[in-house]
Amino acid sequence: MEQNQTGSKSYLISIVLVAVLGGLLFGYDTAVISGAEKGLQAFFMEAGDFAYSDAWHGFTSASALIGCIIGSALSGFLATNLGRKRSLIVAGLLFFISALGSMRPEFLFFEYGKPTFSLLIVFNIYRVIGGIGVGLASAICPMYIGEIAPSNIRGMLVSWNQFAIIFGQLVVYFVNFFILGDHIQPLVEEMGRGLAAINPAAQWTVTTGWRYMFGSEAVPAGLFALLICFVPETPRYLVSVGQNEKALGVLAKINGAQKAQEILQDIKDTMTVKTERLMTYGFMCIFIGIMLSVFQQAVGINAVLYYAPRIFGDMGMENPMVVTVFMGVINILFTLVAIFTVERLGRKPLLIWGSIGMAIGAFGVAFTFGHEGLEMVTAISIMVYSASFMFSWGPICWVLIAEIFPNTIRGAAVAIAVAFQWIFNFIVSSTFVPMFNMHLTEGDDFGHWFTYGLYGMICVVAALFVWKLVPETKGKTLEDMTKLWKKS
Image (cartoon, rainbow, N blue to C red; front, top):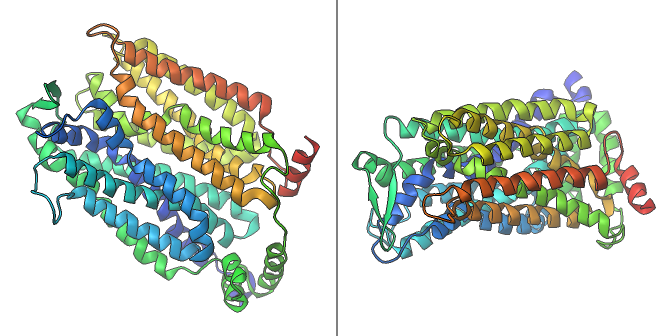
């Protein structure tokens, strides 16, 4: 009887744990390329029918992000028409198909182990399929948790989705490390039409290692697709399709019978709230939301997350995967800093200090990369750069995007902002390798310092943008945000 009046915390926690698996897969899928990309590059550079250039490798490493743009664009439509739960099942199945297809793109149609241009296209299609799953999960997992959680702990529970994303990246760093084992990453030298000279000791990594790395995602993806079948649909969606009794049942299990009746009435009232045109609150409201997403990606963080082993390897480190795993642990710890301080310190201070920290780290990499004797300074600079992002732009951007838009335009505005986020994620990720390898004269390090110098400058601009234009939302209700934008 007591549980019926107070709700079951264990029931709520079990639901949220299943939902954040979607966030974990989000992180896993976007970071799995970090350990696989060198072996993948060496594999396709042995193709005889086309030249696998840096530009092709940049596109292939980032092709999943095309799917992310598609998935995020479709998320609102699917969440409304299929429901939150079934949309997440679709995302889980897409993750699973992508993992197996990326591991063995030759399935049914191609000779195993023979790299060709057609095989590259098929591989990228499988990665795009996984990206669609990521795009769906990135939008719908926070939505699902937000709609299922009690209002007094909603912010904290939604924040754990960001933790799950970073944890997923850490998990895949460990998985890639153990898959690689005693094998080494290939040292590739281009010869003519993209053909490659590969050190013989790295052949296992070239033929097999990268396949296991992509295929490993099938385990958490299959688990997620299965477990999500056993969680309830969100009360808000159930009310929207007229299933009030089911909604009341879910609310009662989580909040208790009496509180459930009150929440159900609030949900019914919310469903009648009118919507307004996107520009009702002015251009700046939408512009600031979009630019938060743009800066989150333009500061260049995913160039570090996706290519960390390559960067540490180019610095001459014997086992770059060990350093990558260590960086993943630091990322986890600094994400926790954000979760536990955002309500006390506020959004703007964390973003500004994070931008400054990232700028220091980026400039540190730009000025020290490739200089003999300064390898440790470079490594520390990369750690500072990554850690500064994790307590600022990583989680806080998502918090602000959820808060900054008035109720009546939030759905459309968030969709636009998230789409810009994935578009700039793709731009940064696909341009990193060509920029990093640029040379003004043979053998110089122009690309190294230019790339990180550019990211450092963008971090400075991001700090100024937040200081001058972004409103502080700490302690404000969503109704306060409506008043704020009407005044401005």
